[in-house]
Image 1 (cartoon, one colour):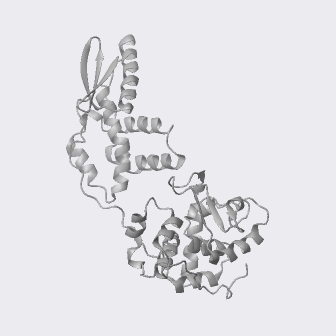
Image 2 (cartoon, rainbow, N blue to C red):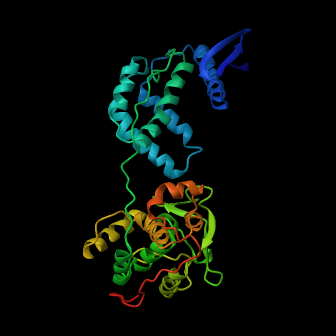
Image 3 (cartoon, helix red, strand yellow):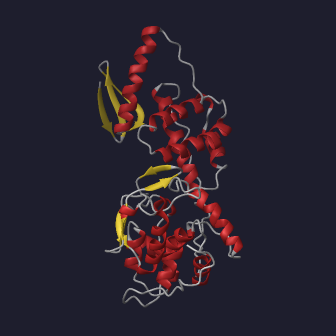
Length: 348
C-alpha cells in the first residue's frame, strides 16, 4: 500500500490501482486509512455486515483516540462538550442521514466561537472516519462557518483603592494568596502549584514550573508560561507571612483544611466572591487579579516590556492589545507601588 499527495488530496495505490480517499493529505489521515484497511480485511474475512454508525458513536471513537495525546484537563473539556452539545443535538442520528443543513442548524446553537471549534475537533474527524469506511462519500462540513464572537469576557481589573481594601481585609485563609496574585500577575492555578522551592527570597525570583487545573497537576498554560520571573518587592511581605503559616511544608498555599495544597481554583473563587461581597466591591472573577497587576503597573508608568515579561505573554503585542488604555508615557524606570501594608483587619 503506497500513499501519494495529489493537489493536497490523499491518494492510495492498492491492488494495482491509484484511488482518491477524498481526504486531505496528512500523516494523521494516512494512519487513519491504514487502521481502516485492517478493519476492512476483517469485515471481508468474516463476512461482517457493516451498518451505519451514529454520529455520537464515531465522535466517541475519535475522543478515545485523542485520549492518548490529550492532557487530562483537555480530555475532560472534550468529554464535557460531547455530553452537553453533541449528544443532545445529534442524538441517535446516523452519519448517512446528516446533511449540510443539519450542520448549519448545529452552528446556530453556538454563541461562543471557541466552544464551536472544540466541538468541530470531534465532529470533523468523525465524518472523515465515515468516508474511509465508505459509509458516506463527502463530508457535510462544506458550508461556511458563521462568524461568531468569542465569549464576552471583559478585562475589568480592580483599582488601587479596591486592592488596598482586599489587602487590609487580610482574609485568614486566602489573604496572602490574593495579595500575591494582585502583586505578581500569576495565574490562580500557577499560585496553587507554587512550591517554596520555586521561590528565591534572596534573589527575588519566582520560577513557574507547574499549575493545578481542575485538580490535576500539569505544566503551565503555554511553553512561555514556564519561566522564572521577578518577585516584586511589594509582594515580599506576603510571602514572608505565608512562610510563617506553612513552615517547612512543600507548597506555599494550602486549602482551608490545611491538609493538601489548593487543587481547585473554583474553591478559591467562592471564597473570593464572599470577600468582595463583604467589602462591597463589584463582583468579578479571581482571574481579574492578573489583569489588576498589569493595569496598575502600566497606569503607574511601568515599562510595557517588563509587564509583558512578568505575564509571560508570547509577544509584547498581546500585552499592548489587552492593556493599551492603561499605558502612560512614563516609560523610563521600574516603579514601586505605594500600598499601605500595616492596617489589616485580620491577623496573619
